Length: 426
Image (cartoon, one colour):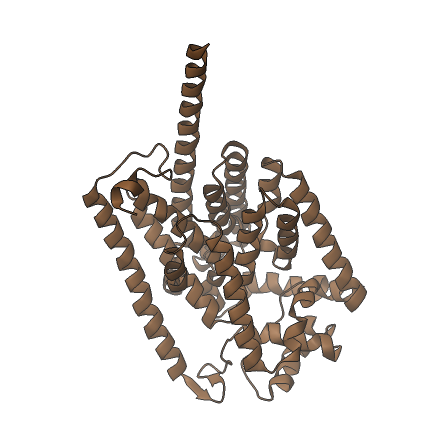
């Protein structure tokens, strides 16, 4: 597609046009950001594998795939009948070490019991084959969900593969591809297959902090079928986990895991603090007291919620709705990590494609680039006590809302013109 055709596309509602020179400049800028990601990923990957010191352990004493050890442990716990013990931190890690056959750095379980219904196949495999299977399947599901969202599919593949969130999720053995596939795939199916969309949203309750805005978005969009489907799916998963693992698994989750997560949020130390872009953690790093952190986080969550309600009630632009929801979730949630930001990667990529198509708002491409790189840079910023994750996300959020408003205004003008022509025709 030539630049002139792209600039006259449908992505730039109400934002004006730009010339060939601007298009080339924007394209070069986007390619530069991707080149930075490629260099960083290659260097980090080489450095990481050079740190493998013994067997599958790195110099930090963690197995390759790092946090994947938790999902693999959960799968084995189902077959070993050890699922009540995984919720007790004093029993969980010794069980992991027995499974792996070696001592390694501590891990703790942080998931609700019904995630075990998805993890049990991992218990059929040894560690490395299970890690490979997990990575291939979840990454493929994520890419499929993302590609289903765009008419310009081919640029998304290399961009998303180079995204910092993708690299961190893949090397960390995390579940960001799975949760991203569930959220993105759900909204991709929402209009044509609301029952299937609701099923995916219901499964996303395995990580509830990433779905906190979804019910409100569905209510604003009046997606009653999807709401019913999601509710029934979540209820079926919880009921199935109670049937298979007993009600005591949920009691242990609320009595042991939830308090532990709260303690970690407020008192925990370690690298996890550098991986969270939330306002709550940022304020903690600045020494702000807990009550004020809670108030600020609540106000941000309410602001994100109000914006999501407005967007889903007023706009019919699916990809911008998804982008607002994705970025808004990380503003609203106090407990989310950089490896969870796979949905934000897609949001930035979709808006960048629009910018190449019809031009960027003043300063927008810089904000998009900074947001794209946030999964990496948040670690550096938090580590040195300059937690700018939430201001960056909030700025990106404002630009998304400006694009939504432009689209609504453009649609209103178009509708008014059609009405006037109809009257003239009469």
